[in-house]
Image (cartoon, rainbow, N blue to C red; front, side):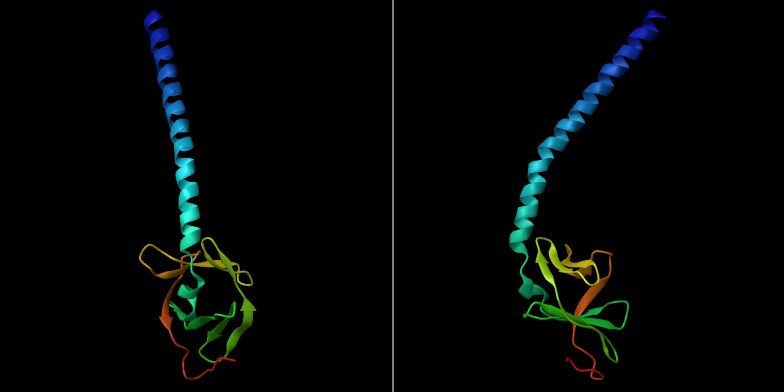
Length: 129
């Protein structure tokens, strides 16, 4: 019985020491994450987003202009007339569609819901308005 009691106490001590080590690691990581966010904010250049982009898996295009507006097209017409976008530390926020455009680690333009885009031009069947 005494050995069982000692074993339980040792297990509690080990568990507490592991938990405190994990918490200490989280605190040490926090400044790194803040630094990464600041560095990321400095690296976002809206000019990288300017131009026409096509969704990889559908026939829709988004045109991002230097004037602070974007428009969305399908192969026949304008789906969303020019509206403003917002530059954030993480990319371009498209509020009317409620998503963020950003470049992933591979340099591919993505939405925050995982859709990828490729640089393109509008089809000849439509024209920018």
